[in-house]
Image (cartoon, rainbow, N blue to C red; front, side, top):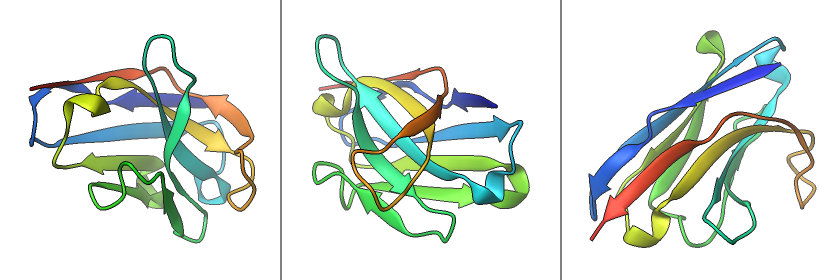
Length: 120
């Protein structure tokens, strides 16, 4: 199973970015997916998750600003980020998680990170 994330970049505070993650090697419809982020010296933390039934979950700091979605026809999960803040700066990873309803999530596969940098 491979997860290929893209869409990171440099943006000013208040701006927007959309991350994409294409999954191959599995039946995407059956995958619960999540986005994580990590900054130097800190643990990787889940940001948003979406179940096979399109249920979503967000960490409090991004709720109302980030939207996770999926397109099963394209084997892709997205993270739309608006009203970005400097504290959103991180390396963002997509992940296939085993169970949506159980936390902490058990990650089966990680994608490579994509860097998001928000300047003030």
